[in-house]
Amino acid sequence: MHIVKTVESLCRSVKKIKSQNKTIGFVPTMGALHDGHCSLIRKSRRENDIVVISIFVNPSQFGPKEDFKAYPRPEKKDILLAKKEKVDIIFYPSEKVMYPTGFLTNVHVDEITDRLCGATRPGHFRGVTTVVGKLLNIVTPDALYLGQKDAQQVVVLKRMIADLNFPVAVKVCPIIREPDGLAMSSRNKYLTPRQREGATVLFKSLKDARKRALAGEYNAANILRRMRTAIRKHTPGKIDYIVCVDAHSLIPLKQLKGRVMVVLAVKFGQTRLIDNIIFYI
Ligand code: AMP
Image 1 (cartoon, rainbow, N blue to C red):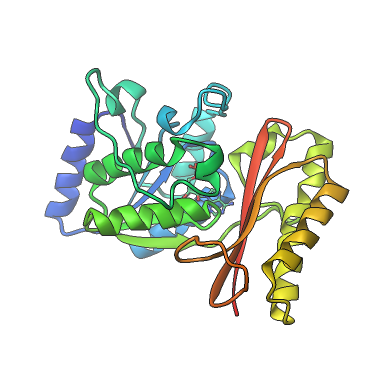
Image 2 (image 1 turned 90 degrees about the horizontal axis):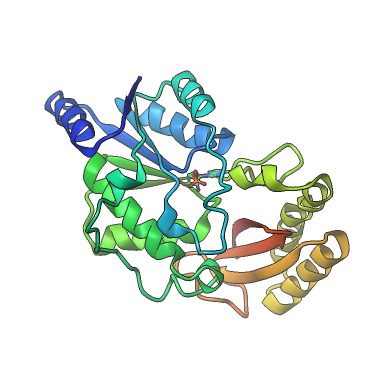
């Protein structure tokens, strides 16, 4: 496994790989790798000759009051795990490499970045699309692996890739959960035992919403009211949003129909957790 820290050196490796007609699967991450990341790496491993992952805690996708400084950076552990998962190349750039002096250009996707997480995290998706756009230009992968855990990120990145004609296939991987149902996240380790216990209500309430909808409750307001009550009753968490949306467009639904996604963000202290569930009506 190679650890590559500069764009030039990564481009040299990519050129060699392409000259051998090998395919590249790419998994962008912010590190603190867990089984969620590993599931993306494994799928990429199965489907490609070469697996490249990036580890970069991207400052431009964090708000000024968010956890950029505190975000976990267990470098040695991540490298060992990547090796175990048979990653071929880790692209591990510094901030200077990604945003050298004079950097002025950003990628912005309109409309769908204003709602849900975009409403409470202004500028977040601009940071994500800019960094992923750069990484796609540097790595030039055949396939990009993303987790359904970050549902809005998937929709936004697919839009960017289609609109700007990035020649890459997008593969979306299912949410990997802890045994008690909590979606795995690098941020779960911030939770106190009480918050961690309470956080299990998120997936429970999503499953309950799906069950009710599949049993014929198509009124979104009724479904959401029940979810809010359960979350408030069982946790100290503060609801940022819970919405039923069309899974393709992210447009809120009053009546459930088609490919429905129930998506939520709840804050436990300073820790903001997101989760979602998709079903067909
Ligand atoms: P992050 O390091 O949080 O930026 O995540 C990197 C990639 O891993 C993103 O595509 C995430 O959606 C994905 N990911 C993170 N957690 C999970 C999870 N629990 N299940 C599936 N994918 C995940």
